[in-house]
Image (cartoon, rainbow, N blue to C red):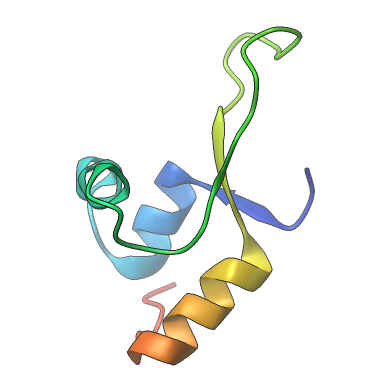
Length: 68
C-alpha cells in the first residue's frame, strides 16, 4: 500500500516510541489503521499500516503537529 505509514514511521512523525503507538492502538486510541494478512506478506514487511489520509485527519482533529 502506498501513502501509508508503518508503526515506526508514525512514531518518528510524532516523536514517540513505537511501543507507545502500539499501546495506543491496543487501547483504541489513534488514527485508523489496517492490518495486512500474514499469508502472502513478504518477510520483514509491516503488518499494520496507517493510511496517510487517516493520519492527517487524526492530526487535524486532535491538534497534533508532526515532529518530522
